[in-house]
Structure formats: structure tokens, C-alpha cells
Length: 447
Image (cartoon, rainbow, N blue to C red; front, side):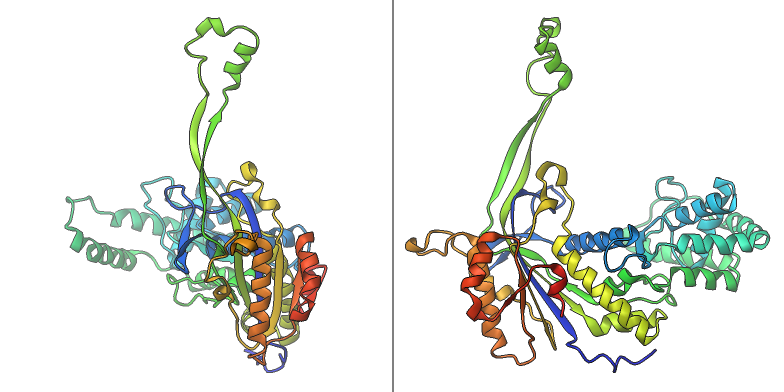
């Protein structure tokens, strides 16, 4: 791999953001309730890093695929369990295979490479891998092209593989004790693998090459882990993302809703409700939904050196990696500011939110400012001992915290701040002494 000694800038870009959300539910637990954590002795609402990362990754990917933004035209990845189905669709649409045979061949080839699939007896999972696999979006087409190029040989191999697989299935002899179930399953898997015909070496190599990260920018950014295939490269992501949490104590509202039945209301409107008065009484459906409001702090870090290493490990030379890394950084910052988890987006318009403040700076290590909000903000008026509304109060705390830290850490570069809130904009004018440079666009947040 090419050395990264030529990179002389600050290795880490730290991003910090404050945003106020009202009556939303961007992420929820298995019971449909908002997620929360206890911090500083108070319960806080939480938006998990997983929800944030997916929203940002998909935002950047969709823009790139649409020819928008810094990554326009760049290769991106897809994380899915459906690679056999994607490959089969390519065999059908691009090479004229019959659907059933295409699915059978694609599944057999990918499974023989090392990925495990669901129970063949269950149609819903039979052709899905057991784990999500993050791979370049054209991987299915590349695998399909190889299968079609080796059509005669792989058709015969697939027939033998499927037959041997069917012959290895033994009738169930009754339930085993739970303690013995895993060992028995592993023994059966090993025995079955030995009895199946080996995938031709060039085909396995072609599948691994297709599934390798290659030049997919979002895999270089967010990383991937694939334990099932030891010789398929894993990628240590270049982005670190924290869970977002409210800077004040959490408050939750259980909103009662009543959904109208249009047909019932139409009968009443046209004086036809006498036809079946009992049936027309009441709402069509009722229930409760939990909603949260608050000012959230969230944080992410880009490891610029790791990003360049990932891109070079995927096959780019140093100049190519440098260009791609600059574009990836610009798009990452854009996604950090603009992307938002889409849960309840239609009923809460949450994806239209804009941050009150974004703080960006470079350094020799990451800096997380969650400690600035360990003591929850008290939104009572200042004359009553509080700090006033959480938004402006959080801005004061965050910037003051940054200035305090930067005076003690010589590796922190000049900060840049962006706001979409006119109240905060006027506040920044009052806080010039804190050393943050106001900017007016997302692009200016990077050095």
C-alpha cells in the first residue's frame, strides 16, 4: 500500500451540532417508545449513532447516484442481504437467463464462496444471506457477468451442488437439548460442506473481487465487517459518530390520536348515517404515539488519514486517494448537517429540521464536547436561576467549552461556526471574543 506520509494536514476533523426538534420520533425501541439515556443524573432523549450514520450514508449515496454534490458519479455501496436476488436479476435482465435458474445459480455460487443463507424450506429467507453485506452497488452485475461468461461450466456445477445439498439434508429425529444444539448444527454444517462440490477457484476469486470494497467511497468512509469470509477484506471506518442526546432533561408526550374513516364521514355528511347508526359511531381507529421535543447535541469525527488509507487499500494511488478524500470529506460534512433519520417523517416533518449551530475544527485527535452538557440546562428564566431557552443556552455553553479547551490544547485549529437560526446569528455577533469564525455555507466548514 502507498504511504500516507504525504498527508500533512490535521488528521481529524471534529464536528459538533446543536439542533432543536419539536414533536418528533426519529428513533424508537422495540416497544415503539423513544430511546433515552441517563447522563448527569437526568434522563435524556437519545438518537442513536446507528440511525444517524445510516441517514448520512444514504443521503450521500443518493446524491452521488443523482449526480449531485462532491461525490457525483463516484461509486457507492449497498448494504443488503439480497445479493443473490440482485445477481439473479442481473442474469435475467442483462444476460437473458430464466428467473428460476438464475436465482438457483446465483445463490449456489455466493453460498459456496462462504456466505451462509437462510433455511431453504422458508421462502421468505431462503435466498437471503444471514448477515447484511456492505458491497459496491455493481457487485451483483459483476458476479452475473462472470456466471454468464462461464455459463456451461457453472450450470453443470450448480446442478451438482444443489443435488448434493438436497441429498445431505437429513430428516429430523426429534428436538435436541439446547446445550447440544449449537455443536450439532456446527457438526452438520461442516459435514455438509465436505460433501458439496467445490466452487471453481476462478469463480470464487471473481465473487470476492466483486464484493471487495474497491472504489466505493461510502465503504471507505463508514467501514464494513464481514466475518463469514476470512479472505474478503474488512474495512475500519474513517467516521466516528456519537449518540445524540438532549442538553436538558427529557420530556415525553404520549399523543392520543383518532383516525377518521372517510366512508363513515361521507355517510354522515350526506345524511345517510341512519342506514347503520351503530356502525357509524366513533372514530375509525384510535391509539397513542410517543413524541419528543428538545435541543440535541451530536458529534462526529472524520479520520482523514484512515480515509486515505482505505482508499489506497482499495486500489487508488496517492493522488487519486487525495482527490477522492477531499470530495468525500465535503460530502460527509454536508450529510452530517442535512441528513436526518426518516422515521415518522410524514407525520412530523422532522426531516425539514435545520441545525441551530454547527461547530467544526481540525486537530491531532478527536474532541467530544458532551461534557459541556453533563449538567442539564435549566430552561427557567435567568432571573429565576435558569439559563433561558435551551437553544441559545446550549450555544453559549458549547462555544465557551471549545474556547476553554482550545486554550489548553495547542493542536486545535481555528473553529468555524454555521447557523440557520437568526437568533443564534445575532448571538454569535456578541460572542466574537470566543474566537469562532462564522461562515455562511456548509462547504466553508472544511478547511
